[in-house]
Length: 313
Image (tube, rainbow, N blue to C red):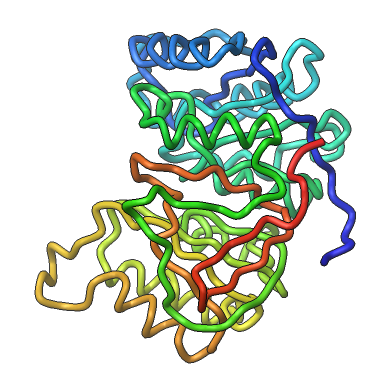
């Protein structure tokens, strides 16, 4: 098991306060109200770090300085116990050069989100040595299925660690490439990961388990992103792969061509690294909460994923 120094956040309990953040795209006030209701129904209090504009017409949830300041404030505020992103969308990557990683690590708290929030996960993992959770955002908790909510709560409270990840019964984890391996879990949204290549925040996959998911991408776009990672040596460096959901990724441009799974098999098979797919994490309704930065063991032959360390303290 890896002995690299990591910063773990304390577990959360009902009664704690979750700071709601919008580091990427905006959320309409009506949806925010529903998200607050959903979070409070789980027993948490809610807090904001800045004024929320109603129906912001821009594709970004405020100026970079506002979004950076929001994150810094939520991490430093002693009344806030964890940070839950309201949504992804687009824009998190622009914050990365301006975040104070020493300050954030000093006040480490769980950061939870997925999709565009992948940029923050990678930066905090690699620059701040922090563990974060790839999991449902506040808006996703609105009318979320019991599986998603239960796994989210069990993960935040520490009840799932260390344990075997289990999909819903009707969605089995499947084998793409046989074998078994272990490593630190990293990754997230494939498009965001590809977009960070060539920057100081590009993903480090050396000896790690690379988790990938996406939404609304044509198979040729998935191929393009994987090709970029392959050319950069990121696929060769990884110890193994966990493929999550690729939601709404059926081809419209080439309906008779390769589907996403065929693309993944073609791109990953040459490396011969243990690979599982259909892991229910990503943009689907059923969502596992994944501890990025934790040591995991993947037995692809037997479709087993084990988290071998506590993700919180």
